[in-house]
Image (tube, rainbow, N blue to C red):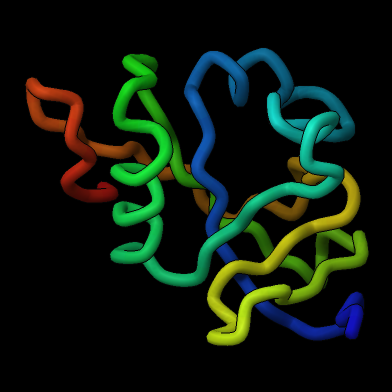
Length: 116
């Protein structure tokens, strides 16, 4: 079920250089969009840290977390997981819908530990 009109803020983990190269554009497209066909998002800081440690620990770039207002983004989105914590956006993230940009803190070994 697509929920384009539901007011909901979700989180998107993004390498700083990727965000910086697109933040002034009308649309942001993550590196995996062409392969996946959607943008991965996660509800909740603790879950973002878990996702980062599962999938991005080998990526040494600095990361940020974008807080995306899905209603303001105006692109179709839906949950495809049973627990409804990982919404997928079927289109770009429009920077106007980004409500906050927070840094991700990592240990020296690359482990993601918190969002500040």
